Image (cartoon, rainbow, N blue to C red; front, top):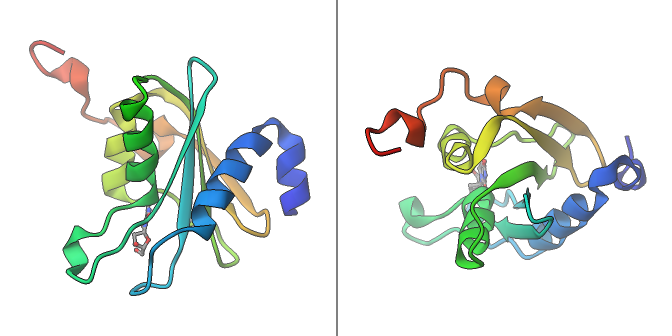
Length: 141
Ligand code: THU
């Protein structure tokens, strides 16, 4: 699929938001820019990019940036997720980010992992993080 075809699919707004964030990624160490965008139940889109640090463990993932923007805006409910990476194969969210997303996204929420050139792998949160732990497991969740 081409980038143009991704835009025809109904999540073009997520793709464009994630692509714009991807272009601003701060990744001088990995040279692996990532963009992420989430759509909330109110219909708004929030994006983020990876932000690396000279003290390597302090770097943050694109998904964490998108979630932070969403929460700062007062939103809590994710209904659709998209990531953008370079290369031929989409980079799906890392394990830590699957858990971060799970806090705000139910098992049926769809995750589109895409590339700049328009390759797409679509899966659900249930597939990416089966038998997951979430707020409901906690006594007051
Ligand atoms: N990265 C993300 O932004 N999201 C992921 O889900 C996987 C990895 C970033 C972290 C680091 O800046 C770079 O990609 C290489 O691991």
